[in-house]
Each structure stands twice: as structure tokens, then as C-alpha cells.
Image (cartoon, rainbow, N blue to C red; front, side, top):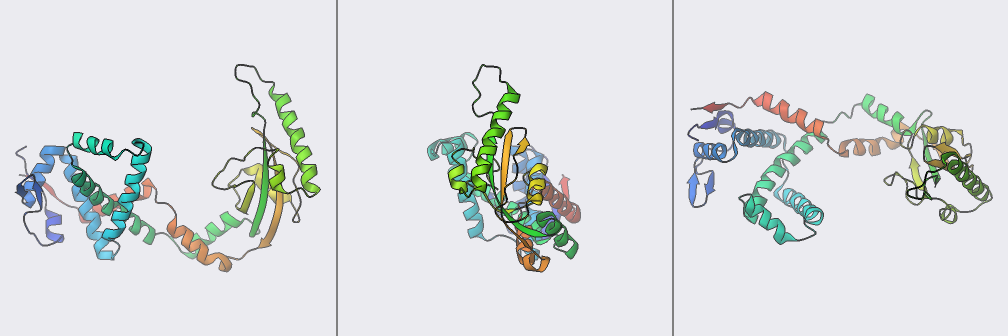
Length: 306
């Protein structure tokens, strides 16, 4: 492509204008030549992405939020291992062969991805730094996590799956299955109230879902609106440690909830934890796109055809 695209804004604001800025094989490329090569090889969108990365890094440098080389290297290594495990069954040679098919060596593929990751991690750092940690935001999160009145609640859960014994190819009698499941739950409840430990009862029950919340029937700290309205209501109705709910009928069977502890909690008592959690919450695509677009609008880099 003979058209030459230049990102003038970046050339002014970035590092000193030294040439060459890239090398293709044994051929050094100046800044203008590199832009032309990018467009010829990958299209105009590639130049836009290149410009966007530079805008992000300029802003991150200004704010002291650009990741270190070691941080980028660590992130790349972790991602690379995930890709090898999930897509290549750990076979690094197959991955390297795929890079060659796309026009990269192992080294250039890594350099390309690390350049992208530097911008991605910079965006995440800026998003986390800019998160709303004002008093109203903290209070809203506090109320959503600890309820009204605010309490720190620990519970144990048993789940009884109505569909665990379904035989493929047969027409199930769902009402009968659910009734049998409720009877299993009532039997377990009687044993629980009599003092049987949850570890013993788990053998009669089924592993609960919500793997990130429940481990072996134990919820170390219950959070409202994480397990469903029915569970919320059951927890709220339990009065003292050791109380066990009646079977809670759900679409998949029955659940039992046992109160382990309940104690009042104040915003000041958990402020530091809430701030850390809010700061470290995963960055989502919406946040990334919003900040990326805002930076491009603020810097308004010019990509000119000559």
C-alpha cells in the first residue's frame, strides 16, 4: 500500500523521535515506514490498535501506573501456560508451529503479545485507581454484603438433588421425585438437629452448586443475594446458632440451612476489607472499552493519509 498513515499526536507526545523504530527481517523501518508496513500487512485497524496502545501507555506513564517489565513478563508467562494447557495439551511445539503459520517466530509472537499486555495491564491499573471509593459507594457495598440490619453470618448448607437418580430414556415422575427428596431432607434435618456434624450428613446429600461460595457444605461467610431469595429468607428466619431450617423447596430439589453464627458488623469494622475488595474487583470489558475510548477522545491522535 502506497498510502502513508502517521499518528502525529503520538510522535509529538511520545519518546524522542529516533529512527529506526522497528525492523522487518534485516530492513530497519523509520516511524513513517513502520506505519506504512503495518497498514500494508494488517490493514488500517492494526494501525489504530497500535496508536491506541501508545495513547494508553502515554497516560499510564504520566500517572505512574505503567506495569513493570517483570509484571508484564509474569502475566505473559501465566497466560501462555493457560493457553498451552487448554488448547495444546501442554505441547509447546504445536503452539510454536501455529505462530509460524501466522507469520511469527516464537520470539516475535511473545514480543507482540507482551506489547499488547503492557497496554492491557496499564488500563487495568488506571481503572482500579479510578474506582469510586467514596463514602456513598462504600456504604452501598456494605449494605449489599451485610444486609439490614448489617450482620456477619456463617451458615452450613445441605442440598438434596431431586434429579440425581434419573434414568436416561425414561419419563420421570417429577412430583414423586421431589417428594422423595423432601423426605430425605427431613430425615437429614432430624439428624442435624440432634447434633450430627455436617461432614457426616454430606454423604447423604449432594454437593451444592456455587463452588466459589460453598465448600463441602460450609459457607464461611454468608452474603445476601448470592444463593437466591429462598436461602436469604431461610437464613433471616434462623434465630440462634444450631438452628436448622425446614427443607427449602427449589427447582432442583430441597435445601437445608444451619446457622453457625450471627454477629453485628459496622462499616468501620470492615472498611479496609471493603476498600481492598472494591479496588481488586475484576476489570470487565465495559470498563476497558470506556476508558480506552475516553483516552482516544482526549488525546485525539491524528492518523493522516498522504
